[in-house]
Image 1 (cartoon, rainbow, N blue to C red):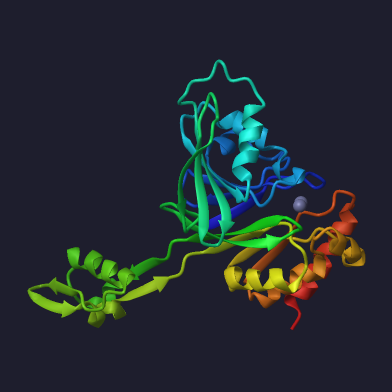
Image 2 (image 1 turned 180 degrees about the vertical axis):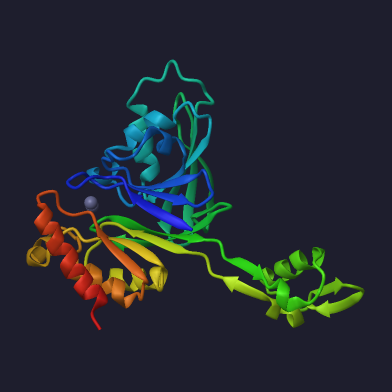
Length: 314
Ligand SMILES: [Zn+2]
Ligand SMILES: [Zn+2]
């Protein structure tokens, strides 16, 4: 199960921590002020996902690496075009004469297009960028795979989808056979779609496809974070492609409907527009986030009301 915790208070900028059940590794979406983020949590972050580098999403990056340096770990940072230069500039702005070379290793993944990701390494004490390779996927580890959409916010703003790995359940009681190595062989054949694989059990050879009915595929949980984006059709097409039928999405709803002319000017979204695109995506649950700092609590309630009305409307 994937869970998200908003680590910013009302009127603070935005930062969302993603946790996976039974895993010590966390992922961080954006680096706005985050009073609720603990040092221990920061030290468990194995990857940071930056939507874009407007100051409200990036100002606390120093506060994050302050607690990561010294861990000796590799931390991945994903972000839009030029993210590597912006990270480099932040790190180079401090004096590092006392640091150990192995204090940390940053691997930066710069998103150029849906199929083109540049991977750079950045290490102390000189923090000179080294282009390592270009790859065609963004992020995958033993817990999650991360897809994304490049949205327009008058600059590229990356929306991320965290997908837990699918799992396969074996129905022992339905099988009537003794347990054995064949079960894992069958699961592997199922995951690879290898219907012709020969599975031997109790002295008989079966075709894998004839045993697939003993298995069920459990699709992994899908949680998305959609930060700043203009409320317009071109963005919505991309959102629908990546986030369709997700389990839970956090989506920027910066303005009240009555302020939607500001949304247009600033390439932001507003309450009912965000609710409607979530409905069109048929997501199971959606939560509006990242409101203008000039709004009071009652303005936020107004945003939430308009958002959920559009989201749940028949
Ligand atoms: Zn922005
Ligand atoms: Zn913002």
